[in-house]
Image (cartoon, helix red, strand yellow):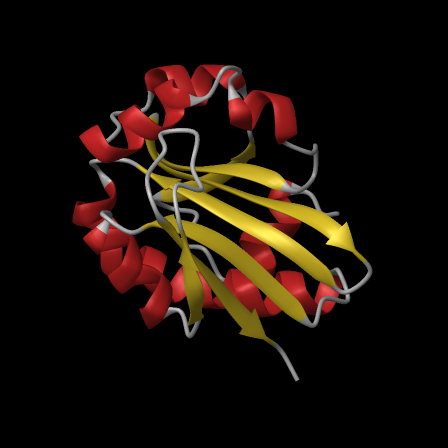
Length: 162
C-alpha cells in the first residue's frame, strides 16, 4: 500500500496542476461520468467502489477539484491483482498527461506490491476503454459472455510484468 503523496512523487505527477487523494465516496458522487460508466455503476446492487475499495490502494486523480479518474487495485492473491479505473468526461482534456501517468502507476505499483500480473474487465461495448487498456499494454485474453451486472459481455485483459 502507499500514500497519495508517495504515489504522486514516485510516478512524477505534475502537482502544480494535479493531485491524488485517497478515494472518498463523494468523489464518485461528484464525478461527471460517461453514460456507459453511469450504466455500469448503477447496475450494481451495491456501490461497488465503496464496497470493494481498499485504503491505500484506491485513489482519485483530481485537477483542482474536478475528478478526472478513480483508480484502484484489488489484490487477489500473491503476485496477482485486479485493477479498475473509472474515467470521467474530463479525462479527455487531460488524456496525454494521464496516459503517461497510468503507465508509471502500473510499473511503480507492480514493483511496490510485488505483482507479476494485473488483470481487469472491460465492457465489450466500451470502445474508449478498450483502446486505453490496449495502449497500456494489456492483452485481451477472452470474452466473458453476460459477465457484468448489466448482463453485457466483457473482455478480460491481463498484463504480465517480468
